[in-house]
Image (cartoon, rainbow, N blue to C red; front, side, top):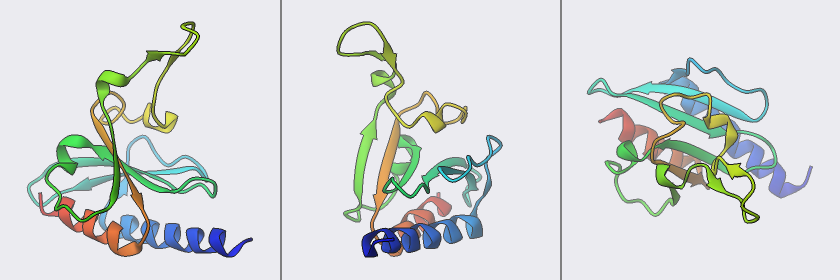
Length: 137
């Protein structure tokens, strides 16, 4: 294992430990070595679906509904929007429709077809900031 892969694995372990401490397994369940699905209940009673990419080939990505992400403090964490309007677009050859996001989201009814945000976590402190912010909603 390269040093970069070891560092990424350590980051993902730290992120998973934080998720396990504040959230429960989502009704859709985890998916083997690829993703972990969670449900976090905020202090205000919001049920927030989260999906974390834990596979060794992917970045440490955390997916959640855009409506919850917009309430988080601006912290310079790498983030990408995935609007629902871009779902099921035709492929370049015009023959096939593509889901347009991580396929493991399809089984999460609360995330499958809504506007999403994907955070790319680079340090454990970023995950802590996101989880603390969501808990306060």
